[in-house]
Length: 430
Image 1: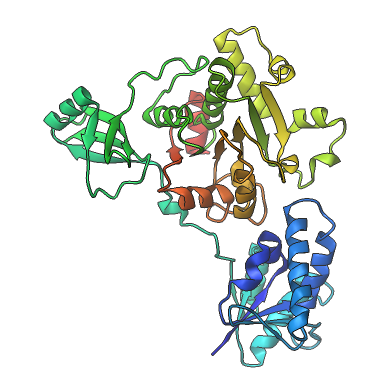
Image 2: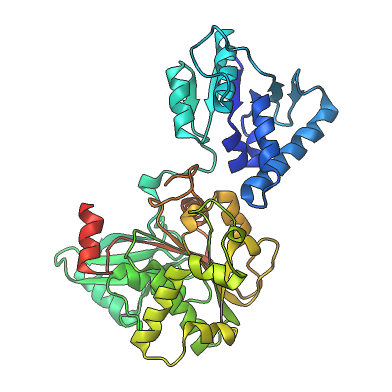
């Protein structure tokens, strides 16, 4: 029996390609979804772009038939637009709310004996659908299992002699090991737990390369645990073009990325400049809604970046100020809104709070990288401001899972809070 998937507007705003991912089943769009797309199409953000893309797809499909009767899709399915359903006398729900009108389409189709599945990114809409007796699901495409998310390193037991030999030769050959390129290994002595070594798997040499025990002073910042040491090793390696740092607040993600970027840009001149950006999400508005010039607006959104940079400059006892680095064109703070469509070569790019981006937005951002550009994505998948993303569906988690196994990619999940004793206690108990 062919299934009928009734899509909520937010599914299409999340991913315009959602119209084509339900195989040979029937996709139904209530007319209210089309009306909502018409509202969003004027926006300049990702939702607006997805709305416009979906509308163009629907317009192209008109050439193959009447949308109200059902139009064949390339994957063997059918897409149909359903007009308003008269809910009077069916259920005691408000017929004036657009969300309820969309739900009524799913309910009416199910009452006619169809196998109906309501698809929505809105938790409340799924709850209401369930109350109506309609099967409701989240849009699962591009979701990952957050509980088994790749953390970038693993622990393996070795003999004491093997570890000593590893320290001496700085290399340990491994064949058919199931490791990913640039995955880190904590070699642990079977008989003495404190006898350990830390290395990185090199896929080309098919073995583990010893990690430097002292990564040095990176603009006054030194790693305080093995995860931070792994992060700095990835950040300072120019052969790794994409680095993802995942961790809760206080684990040092942004601080380490900024320190490494300053070292690579200001000290080593490996890149023309360091570009730092964050998604403008919490207010739910584009940067243009804030008062002031572009630079004045960015101060509001970039204050956490300023705080970290000032801290680094203070402990390094440098004479430079953040504004001085900007004036010298060594540092650029940019809103993600203005990165779309650009090709950005020879820069050390840091995207902070990347968990607030959709998988498609992550793809758009990372694909901006030009020749000799390194991209760093930092964020906490459990601290999301977007109403339609969660720990499993956000772009940062998706990037980690999709990119693992690539030789130019490296990742580590940081777990230990190093900000302060109070911050650590709050993260644990609150």
